[in-house]
Amino acid sequence: MSEVSKFFQERNDDIEQMGKDVALKQKSLEWMLHADQYKYTYNFTWMGRPIIKFPQDILALQEIIWETKPDVIIETGIAHGGSIIFSASMLKLVNENGKVIAVDIDIRQHNRIEIENHPMYESITMFEGSSTDLEIVEKIKNEIPKNAKVMVILDSLHTHEHVLKELEIYSELVTEGMYLILPDTFIEFFPKGYYDNRPWDVGNNPYTALMEFLSKNNDFVIDKKIVNKMMITEGIDGFLKKVGK
Image (cartoon, rainbow, N blue to C red; front, side, top):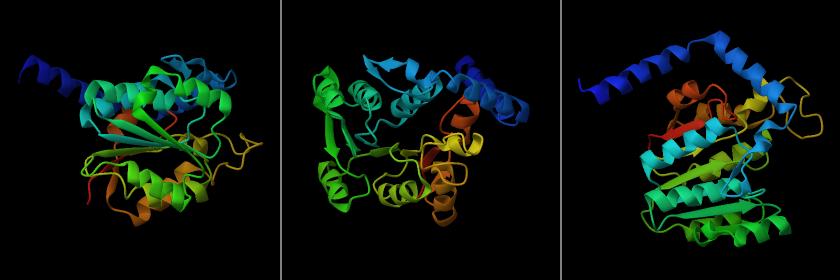
């Protein structure tokens, strides 16, 4: 075995063992809860735009995009635009002709101005409307080049009903070997009532939608290695790889 292969084998063994460490998972969850008192994920930007993610999730997305080299990344949820700017910048590295297609029910004007003036905007197409509106979905489909490798990130409204509908729609657009990523599954593991001013909670969130989706769909598997090596992540079990059609 070469030294390079040995390094990666040892790393994979460590990740597998870490994934079995229940105490570390609990400590990681407690850390996320504590840090959230200070809106920790709001502390970071990507190329000047707030990205609102844990650094571990940003790094994991980089690894996935570098490995799979998608032609298209579809994102539901835009907010300040940091995530779509990140995706566009990564596509610049792996696929010069790659494009990001994004949708949000409300693209606030101040954010739209900043995104449209960003140097990465040339690779981005944005639609305003519901991610589950069939007219919007059709517009997104029309932006996907023929035979493109498609990756999807679902990060809009976090209720079970909405996310399940997104999963049913957008899973069909993900191509074999590519990823469907579901942030904010960690809502299920935070205390009940934590988001007292939001329509989602324990039992009604992306994680519960994910579990229902997977109970009826065999085309995707959870990439446990990604989740296990991060520990601190908003996407607990939310990194799905398409292995079917």
